[in-house]
Length: 118
Image 1 (cartoon, rainbow, N blue to C red):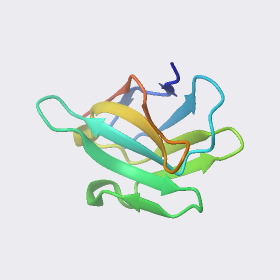
Image 2 (cartoon, rainbow, N blue to C red):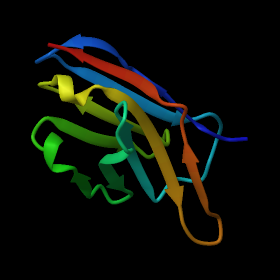
Image 3 (cartoon, rainbow, N blue to C red):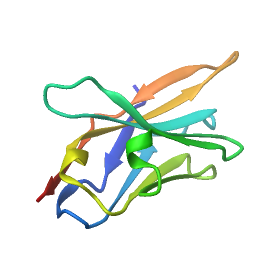
Image 4 (cartoon, one colour):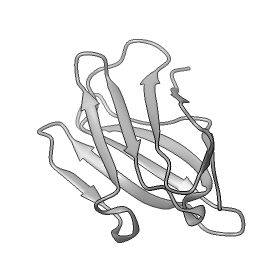
């Protein structure tokens, strides 16, 4: 079964940076949408950032200007560069890849922990 595999999480001090990466466990058709979600303890999972094949990006307001999502279509990999991290960014971050049409899928990763200390 194909799944997304995240890496790059860890512990960082407030104001620091981390870069998350996510790739499929095996070859897949290029996703239409790729995204990062996060879930903090006691809270619902939220969409942090998304990017479509053409490169258009969207961000939740709380991360605008600090986080940047990008993708490498040749590698079917998505990245999340996180700068100026805050304690409220602490969460498990999940990668998602979706494809629509005749060949469709909705793939998730197991998540990677990001902890920001104050």
